[in-house]
Image (cartoon, rainbow, N blue to C red; front, side, top):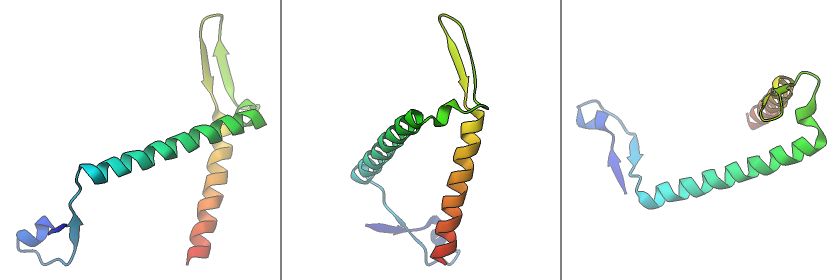
Length: 94
């Protein structure tokens, strides 16, 4: 079911239509987001076992009862890898 955009009701001509989002559609999005988060969690565990989050630039502070961890170098490595992957996808998609 679709309805026209509010801009069309205000007298502004538009051909765009907006999907009516109901509870079932929202539930599907929540399931997809949950699966995505679970896959991201599995990836983080696997990358941690490989040693990604123990790089020399990763800072860790703590004592007996607390610990603070700043994965600076790991974030830089992940950023470079994701940038290259997305750049390649964009390059070959054209």
